[in-house]
Amino acid sequence: MSVGVSLTELMEFTAWERSKWFEWLRKNGDSVLAISVGPHGDGRMETIGDLVKHIFIAEKHHIDRLSNRALTDTASIPSSSVEALFQLGGRSRRDLEEFVARQSAPVWEIPREFNLLNTPVSVTPRKFVVHVLVHEIRHWAQIATMLRLNGLAPGLPDFLVSPVMGGGLKPRPA
Image: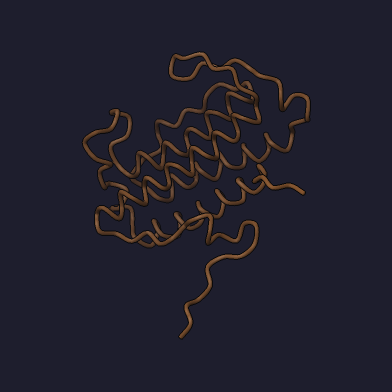
């Protein structure tokens, strides 16, 4: 009996969560992307749009690294367009899915060296992919909190109510 969450389930959840965010952001308009993430950041991300772009760039660049490719240039992708951001997210997710599908058991568990933010890191490809997925989940939660603090209700794109692993949100009794 398997009691853990599988990589497939995490990928299914993040795909579902992305679809919910895309739907919500598209409905509420590009102006939502201009909302500030607050004054205490590290200077890399100033708006919700910057943070969404960061989610997708991190996935794309990490898969580029794992695939031994040059990092994709994303400078021309605006942080102010829901459509442009989620097109990047679609490309990054296709790359992730293709990378995972190509992996074989022994290679999947062999640590590799990477330089991230000028810091050497030794990590297996499997752990790196799990990091990509958890990173995304954490940032969507931050975005939900920032939107709520700005008086917006982004819904409930939460694992508990997702269709992953069965179940989900049920209608309230009348």
